[in-house]
Image (cartoon, rainbow, N blue to C red; front, side, top):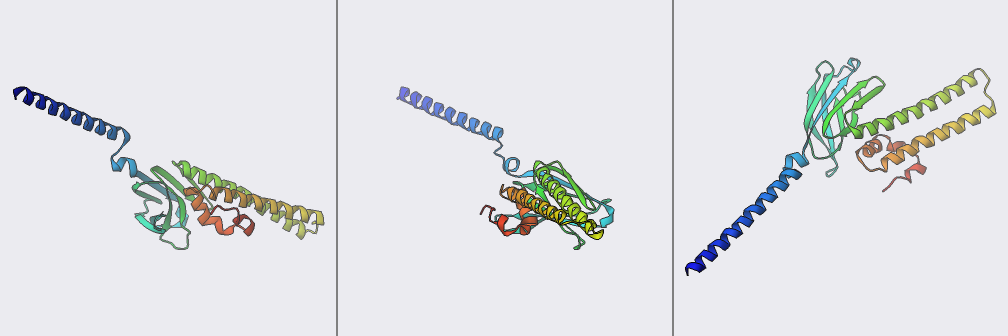
Length: 223
C-alpha cells in the first residue's frame, strides 16, 4: 500500500507539473502574439486637422462608416483651437471617415481613419494629409485627378480663346475634342482601377466620384 500511495502521488505531481508547464507556455504565447484584445483589435488613433481661417469653422464632428451595418457612427466632436481640430480614439481596422463642419455649406472632408497620428491640412482649393500610407494613396489619386482636370480646363480655354479671335480651324477643333476625350477616358480609367481595389481608399473614391463614371466605365466595376 505504501508503494502504491508513493506511486500515485508521484504520478499526480508529474501531471500537475505538465499542466502548470502548459499554462505557462500558453501565457507566454499570448504575451508574444498580443492576445490582449486592446493591443490586437483596438488601435489608438489621433487625428489633427488644421483648417485655414478663411473657412471660419468653430466646431467639427468625426464620423466613420460602419460597413457591417451600413451607417455612419459619430466618434467625437472638437472645438477649434486656433483653426486646429483634434480627435482621438480607437479603431479595430482602417475605415472610411469624414469630418463634418458646423457650416453645412462646406462639404465634409473624407479620409481613411486608421491607427497612428494622422495630420490633415486644409486650405482653399487644396489639402494635404500625412502619417498614413492609405491616405497617401488617396492623395496620389487626387493629385492625378487634379492634373487631368487642369489639362482639360486648359484645353477648353484654348478652344474658347481661338474661337474668340476667329483663329479656330476645323483641325484644331477636332484635335481638342479628341484630346479631351482621351483625358476623360484616363480620368475614368484610374477611377475604376482604384475603386476595384476594394479597400477603404477605393470606397471613398467610389462614394465621391463613382457617380461621375459613364456607362462604359460603370460596366468595368467589380460587383
